[in-house]
Length: 415
Image 1 (cartoon, helix red, strand yellow):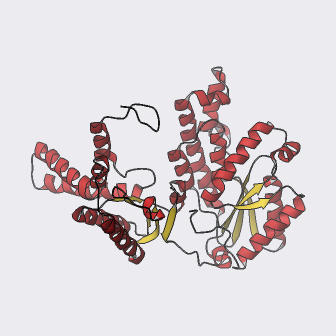
Image 2 (cartoon, one colour):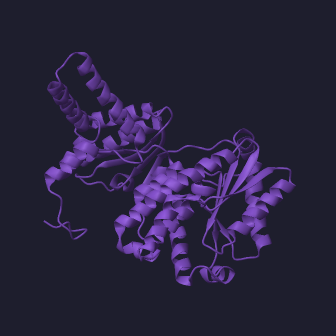
Image 3 (spheres, rainbow, N blue to C red):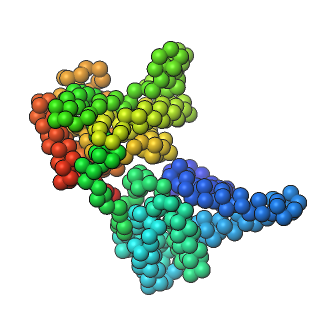
C-alpha cells in the first residue's frame, strides 16, 4: 500500500505499534516527560530487584508495566484509536473538548496551553481528536503528572486526546500546527529595568549578510556605554574553540575534510547523512558559544549579540533542508533574548554593501528569515536606510524596553 501523501509504501502496522510502544511522546522537545518515565520505570525495576524477584520475572514485570503505562499514560490509547479510526458522537466530543480546555486553564501546573487542529477550528467530525500542546510550570514533574492524568481520564472516558508536552514555550512555535487557539500563556511582567538589574539584558540582531548587523551592534554598544550602561558586543556564530589545538571546531573541521575529499559545501544537499552530521557538529559548536555567552551575561549589563540561533538555522538550511530536531536543540539551548531584532533589507542592496555571497543565496536566506521571524518572535527593523537611522530605530526599542514601556519579545504564539 502507498502513502497517498508521500508516494511511498506505508509502514506495516506492527512497526508503527512497536515504534509507538517504544517512543510514543519521547523527543528532544519533551525531556521532562522522558525523564519522568525513566524514573518511574526505574523504580518499578528497583522494587522488583529489592524484592528478590528473579531476573526473568523482573524483565517480564517491566514489560507489563511499560505496556500498561504506554496504553494509559503515554498516549498509546490515542495511537490505537487513531489507527482503528475510532469514532465518537459529536456532542460528546465538543463537551469533552470544553472540559479539557477548562482543566488546562485551571491547572497551576501548566504554563502554556495551545489547542490546534479541528478542535481549534470548531469543525470536528466524529473521528476527530482533541489536540493539545502544553508547557509545564517548574517543577516540571507537576506538569508531567497533569498530562498523564489527562491521558488516563481520556482512556476511562473513551475519548480521543493527543497531548504533546513541551519543555519550554519556545518549542511550541517550532511544532506549531495551524490553526491554533491559545488557552493559556505566560505573561512577562518583569520590566526591562528589573531584568537589567537582576540578570542583565540580552539583545540579539539577526539578518542576512550585508544588512548592517555588525556595524549597528557595535554602535549600540557605544551608545549604551555613553549613557553609562555596561554594554558588551558578542559575536554569536563564532566557533568557541580558540588558541592552539583548541582553535579546532568540529563543524569547521568536518567542512575542511569534506573539501579535502573533493566535495564542496553545496554538494551536501545530495548527501543527507553528511548534512545531518554537519548539523549535529554545529550544535556542538553552538553549545560552546552559549557557554561563553553565559559568562558575559551578568547583572547590570547589556549584551548585544551579532547573530543568534535563527542565523545558525538559516546558515544550516543553506546546505539543505533543516532538521526539526537540530533546529529545536539550537533553539532550546539558547538563552531567550529580551530584545530579538531582525534586520530586513533588500537582498540587492545587501549585495552592494557586502559582495561575499551571490544575490541568489542572499535572496534564499531572506526568504528563510521571513519564515522564521514569527516562530522566533523577531521584531523587524527596516535596515535599508543609513546606519544612523537604523541605530536610532533600534535605540528607541531598547530605551523603551529598559524603561519598562514595552516588551519587544512577544509571548503570544502565532496562530
